[in-house]
Length: 116
Image (tube, rainbow, N blue to C red; front, side, top):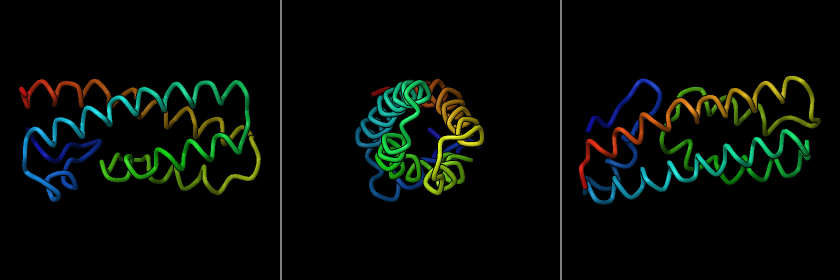
């Protein structure tokens, strides 16, 4: 499995360990987290509670940054800086969910390639 992709990277994981079982476990956990966070973001778009959004962003930030998800870092920083739920914030949340939806099947294919 390649460590570097156009939309994300496993370089950080390979720096920690080159054990395929470890890489598989970490990618699996990330995929599960992304699924959960996408659902949380969807629910937050309905409730529009900024404090809860910032809490969710704070939780997902380390894993998203460690996977070097293209575009997500910038969106996260913009979301962290927001002081009100407005149209721009709504667009940023949609963009982040879109990134998650795009990379999830790609990462699932990577897991099959690892074959563990």
